[in-house]
Length: 543
Image (tube, rainbow, N blue to C red):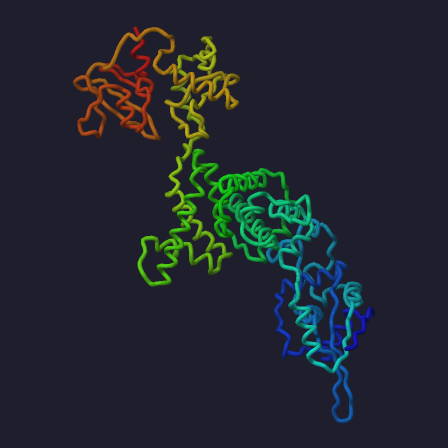
């Protein structure tokens, strides 16, 4: 086999030889045309930008007919590129316009680069650009041999050796998102990219697969947070995100939160079996919602509950295979089968995640945070007057300092982040500058407040005791609902309790909240022949 490297070929010569059918395709071993129009456009665009064009491999052949010998070339490698060049030169399609994101999203640095060929067909290009394209030099390997098997062996080696994977190519793309994915997914050959512990230690698959998974998960996570929708995570979608996020900010709130979620999952699953890719996807999205919407405490059960979910999925898959019934049938029909079919389709991921989140929340039974973090104007006024305009943090320090309305804040005794509800029973009045901020201050105040629940605000002895006069109406706001009751024969009878009475405010509060608490600071009273409501604890200390 003889190989000659020729450096003087041009794109124009390729066009002419393809047109004259001197460049040919041996369909016995060559695949058909596969490139999409977008791929063709991107290749032509690369030529205009003077990017290096890979070498072409041709098999130089001769045929004799009627005493005339003709020379031609079989294309061993380069068919897709040559067809793209020729079809563009024939006006088959216009090139992409970087400013038009309807077909492909170019990175910002490409958009900013002059692009006089944008959106133009070949015949619409000025003469100098047509000439630039045709005069672009390429490298050609001309191979001469009569042994057809050598050519096929070369083709197999060129096509089926160890080519770059799609993710390998992305890892070399410019831009900050490339850096971020390498940081998350890891690349052991590079010291600065060890990968975060979740992907390095717990995610199944080789490095390229882990980096691709990291990119796919972030794209889903970002799209959910930015657009509240699920997106496809196919290879093309990943490529487009890389191109559009060249200016990605790895220190943005979303990026830092993503790293926090990864760290939380690693903390929960550290030392446990590795996690399959589809579970990592749904765990990231689940933990994202758990961090915002639920009280901490679910972390200790997450790994065990995921294992229970997997046991049910496995049982359902086996039952389906054996054509028998299973109480966990939906674990296959709504989740398991969709990890094998169109698994990177946005609609499929949405269907899987809806089921995953629903079932995992049932298994975890986390406590939901009160949706209302801020107190209403009405609640603020109630607490302001209930606490007699005194700063409760100052009272803890031994001082009775008045608070003006404009300088007042309302503080959650049990923090909202730990499940404290946004209601007047969990609220106290404080100066804005006294509002507990640090974890130590918050905990110190909570313990003092709990210890002081049985005492009046002015530390005097109670003047009255349970029960108030019959006919007194009582109300208690809890969980977004107002519960009413009335005193009959010395008992507090709650509405809807079928006549059941309670001998203390605390017993009535426990009936409503299912927890033990000081009911004197829960219930408001309206005594017979009175129009105003007053806190029960205030009523018992009044003269």
